[in-house]
Length: 398
Image (cartoon, rainbow, N blue to C red; front, side, top):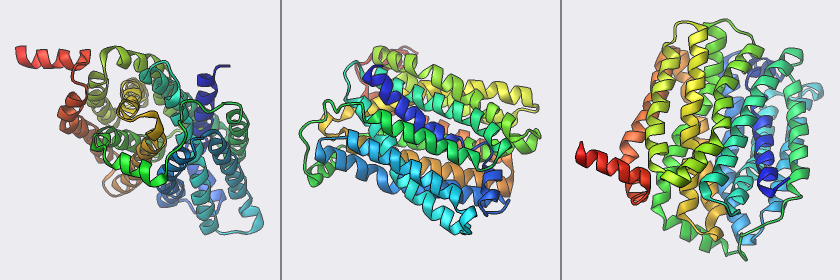
């Protein structure tokens, strides 16, 4: 198994562990003492992703300063596994839901280290930034797809089963990560040096902004999207998980070829045009009158998302040298985690107050807006690449 494949499997495992909880989230939260209201599930997810925001850059800065990433990936995955087991043990020990939320924060702090630094290690490999980020995106998509399918079935059998399964998967990820050597990290830099250099690269805010909105959509579908399918079409957790997988499977399968494509034609078309199509498809899901059409549109959403994700992450790699990639990818994951948090909150609040359709319009509209607002900046960053040149000639000749 190549290093790229092993690292992709680690990324895949982290996503599996997270998404296992989504299809049966309502039942799991009830079993943990959180009650049956949507906000309890929202806080359950927000606790973990709040820690992602706080810790992602710190893990990256630490890895850049040490000049090593592998031990940190192992520690992050192992810590995440322990936290999952601890959360599952809370009801049996008589603990409250507040204890669950604290453990979710601690676990999130560990898990983001495994996730972010595994992607950073992929950035360190040779072979093309688009290809390496395509491997990461494929792992993310397939991990989310498998987690959504298996998680729904496990939750039907036992609402705590997804937690135990997530712990097993993360423990396996820790063992596998230990076999991957560090490459291309450099000898390490002082923390203040790395931080200062990242601050001098404002262009990173462009892929960070796209990462924020893209993860916002993922957070929306993980919480409000699953609730929408369960409420609007009266499906159980197992079928809700399968429906979520209809997005994640094409999202996963197309990431690697889309990443390769962005290496050949540049980042502009996949990022900008892909985001526009992505936003329109999200709104269309909310407008679908019957389950079959909504499910089909979830596939379209996945295809559009696959065009955007690897090219956006590759933009981060394009902008920084190897010695700063840990912090740069940590920053990307901070914005991504903030996006997930916003997606949870936006989906939960807007759906609860105004209904599901306004929530779909809001989320899809944000995806369209970022594409339109940032198109000029992406064009400047990718000037000279084939896709950007095609766009320039089309505008000039149009």
